[in-house]
Image (cartoon, rainbow, N blue to C red; front, side, top):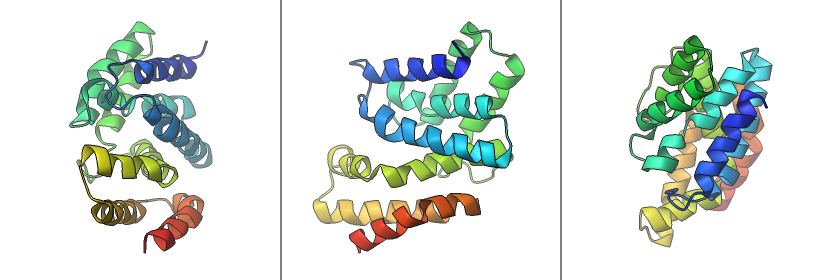
Length: 185
């Protein structure tokens, strides 16, 4: 079995555990859409698809295991241990570690590599397929009213749109972005 599949299965099993903070839904509605976008961008931009996809699968594992705050930091211990278990090359583990630490726009504004941008772009793009989850988070985790949630979701998605770096990302997401903005206006 290849490393990408092993990591994917590991993330899925963590999402299925009763201790998973958000349950199985993030696997279906965030992880899977994001892997499509990360793979597509990696192919189109000619980057190491295996390393990008492994980083992508692991990018939010900290929020599944430990909760959301600082998940980009807590994931590092989990990912490093898992990748070492698989005898994954140390230099690639360090790259993945660096990329995922920098994947959150709200925490790190400078992108030093194309891989970090791909991971961040794919993360951002997946939100446009995940409106129900964003509303659920607003209602359940942030305890917002319907009006507050609508405004919050609209603002989050507008910010995500503005944070896309690649024209190709905007081309892919533009129909969804425009439809969502129409519905939320």
